Image (tube, rainbow, N blue to C red):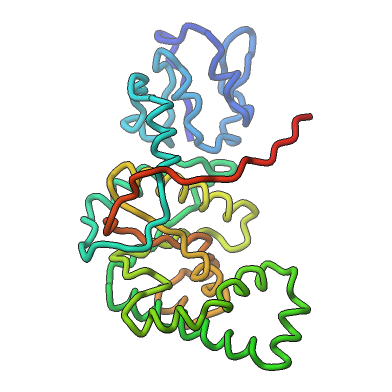
Length: 287
């Protein structure tokens, strides 16, 4: 890896030194100097902060580095996107164009990752038969949990596990499973919502911040897709089941050593929401 300061362009502002958290760039004799290039994690900050494009970096694509369009940075527009986005559970029977999906993924790769690992990858499922097959398998799994919870030892187990995340995530749904089954028999998909597209975000299973990295990318995806006129919905139950169901992992070809941290369905909403939603106030403590 070679990083060069172009002396004929550099104005010695030292912004590259100030912004380099890794300590690659350092102030040596009042000159910004590449002191320890092997520490570089390719975050691109030096290229982004330099006002005169006076840095060349062999491990970064200079064609991707362009001047920011600051006139497009509208905080009110972003606020409207964030507060008007809804979880969409009814979709048109219309596929999402592949070029639009690629546009969304291209945006998601700019999401921050711990230590700039950029270790988030995607599995896109556009096969409607496979999506329905996955949904039916998970719904059948839910029915088995319901039957188990109605047995004496199942009730005792749920009482013992009442405070665990597992119990908290399934108990509310068990209470209305009879209704869900009636609706499912009428053709409603309560798991993947008859969506035309399923997106899985996965990362190394044992990397410390894989979950954070995937969810940060997912937040950008859900907001951006909303701005594009698409809808999304987190499917936490699928994410949970994928931890244990080897058959599902095989169907979805989850790479060995990696884990799905986010499952999203996506498509064109069957209807729009006219108004924003109500949300409880955030708990805040100032110190």
